[in-house]
Length: 330
Image (tube, rainbow, N blue to C red):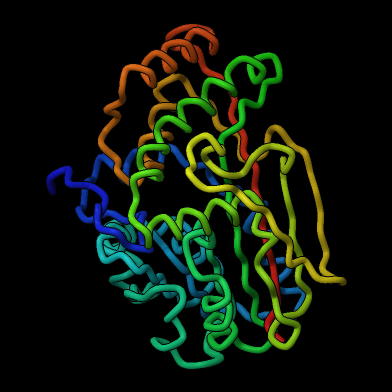
């Protein structure tokens, strides 16, 4: 197992990446995330079928450990799983070994913005981009996606944000404590970052706060755009203004004719966490993952949160703000 030199400390726009293969990190990473439900995937496939999409080749952008690529293999003959970080691809190769060996999954080292330079034009039926659009140059990426997709091919973008205590009686006391833990954990990372990383933090924060509404889909390339939100009255960014040394600005590029939906569902992608589950989520979402080393203020807040959750061992229900954007290639 590699050492715990974890995330890169260089000043880079790619501020969230692993430089080692730390198996403990990836086990905790997958345990801390919501599980995308079968009905969620089916909503994507239903949209794809409704616009005459085929099920030959799918492309999973920013595949990470490959959990979305794995699901796509149940419906698509061939899946290309790409990531800009080679360590992520090493993890995916390990976790998807049978599918890679059988050549149903092909691993590709590429950024989202450059993906069209690695694949033939009009060669992909579906592109998925889960939990990555705030981290990339959206106009460049969408241009590359449009070149890669076949006519009537589908682009599915989704993102989930800050965990929400689902039970209202606990949300009133627990949520402010979790918010403070996240702010104190992210603040030193954001506020001490270099100019390139700071610009990326700003872009990512504004995009999350906008529920990805700032992403523009030119009608020359995209049609039948749908934007679906769950629990959108709760903040999407993993941290609040107190963590940032820049202003957070929301914007909207939603065009006339795009379909939008809003659903409040406090059981959506529901998870059950004790205090260790909360700690796990915070740790794996910090670019400088260090296994949970916190300063005194954060530890005091964790202790307060544990008591508010019902003391040690108490389990509380968690849900999420979520956005899904679907678009069909012209």
